Length: 137
Image (cartoon, helix red, strand yellow):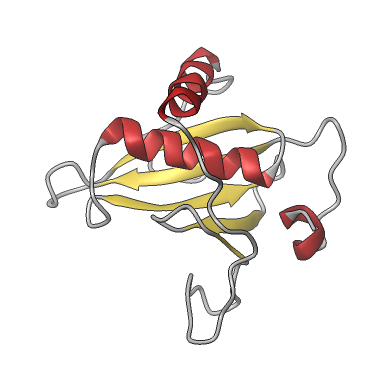
C-alpha cells in the first residue's frame, strides 16, 4: 500500500508535494531553509529529501527533518533523517514510542541520488521566499 493510501490522502496526476528542510550549517544561529519542490508522490518527496541530505553532506544534528506539505500548505507527513516517512502528530512530535513509519526509506543508488539532485536544481522557484524561514502557503 502506498504512503498516500496509508495516510488517507487522495492523489491525482496534478498533485504536488514540497519538502521544507532546516539546515544548521554551523550549529549556531538561524538555520538555512531549503525546499524540495514538485514531488508527485510521497515516495518522490522522500527521495528528494534523501538526495538533498546526501548533497549537503551533513549529519543528523545539522540536517533537520523534512516537513512535507501539499499545495495548500497543509502538513502531510515528516521525513526523518534516515528517510522514513511519518504521519503528522497532533502534539507536534515526529516520533513517539510505538509509532510505526508510514513508509520505509526508499533505496537509492548514487546514480539515482545524482538524477534527483539534477531534477531538483532544474525546478524553478515560482514565488520568491521572504526570508526563506517560513513554510510556503
